[in-house]
Length: 119
Image (cartoon, rainbow, N blue to C red; front, top):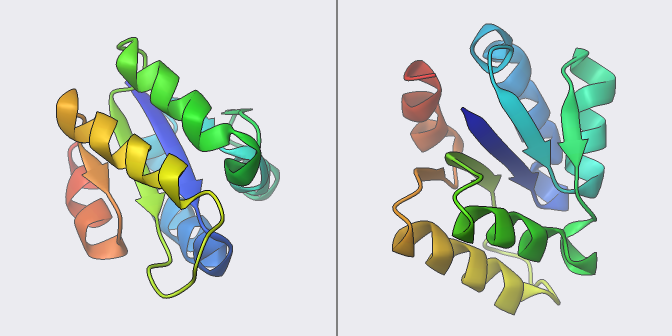
């Protein structure tokens, strides 16, 4: 399975903790991440993560392109809904594509737990 991992700045440590708690599940899959999130996960877990650009620099759009081409099967996107993001249109477009292509998408830890159990 090809899995995208994305986290806004205030959620990166939460994402890292979540991945570490579920590392055995993620080991068996092909992982993709936006810039800083992907590098942080790879550096702190030993998992191989293909890194796109940072979200504000087009990483969200790169993930969206993979989704629209059938190259992503699941997305873990820990969003910070209380902080304004200059690339919010890109975030919205990615969420829209996940709905269009019926890609499972977790935007918080509790939903992510359910998806991780199915990995």
